Amino acid sequence: MVHIAICDDDYKQSQKTEKLILEKAERFSPETELFSDGTELIKAVKNGGYTPDLAVLDIHMPGTSGIDVAKTLNLLVPECNIIFLTSFLGYATEVYETRHSYFILKSELEERIDAALTKVLADRTQELRIRFREGRTVQTVTAAEVLYLERILKKTAIVLCSGKKHFTTAKAEELLKDFPADRFAHCHQSFWVNVEKITGMKTESFSLINGEEIPISRSRKKEAKDAFFAQLERQTEH
Image: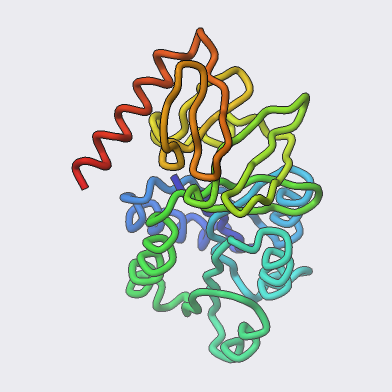
């Protein structure tokens, strides 16, 4: 699933844009949110924890322009791709003040939105990512970077292969909700292990590529064993 924000002060245009996106991006399982102005979108990100994968922004809006919204999203949600929509070609040079993926004239929306969505979303869906809020910023890591997740009191530690750790208040189940069920093995009340980083399984623990031993609880032993052998089968197939 990809989360797509559509921000345009023209409601009819927003509906038209949404309809086209739902049709053209169906294979990416899009979930859209409509915003009538840039301030509303930024407020949702800052205060509501909203983290879009893609923002489709009208440039010319009352108050906060689409370009200013993009600059803020570049800082708060750096992994969010941007597609600019406008009726005015004169904005073409101003958009380069931001990190963005596409610039589309509204008069050409139907002809160009399919190519734009394919370019933006195909790259994103090639690799699974974990997105989380750490402090006041939104961070993203690829699944390939993660060794395991550990719930510690009221925070979840995301432990990377590099040795770095991120901490977020989000629960592991929430962070992994869009992942295939067998990608992370919930082997203990407090641990979710990336099955691709397991080198061996002992009676009461998993051995990981960095030498760490992650405990397997008695109540989750069958689930852990099934995930481990499913991963061995996938490695054999490749």
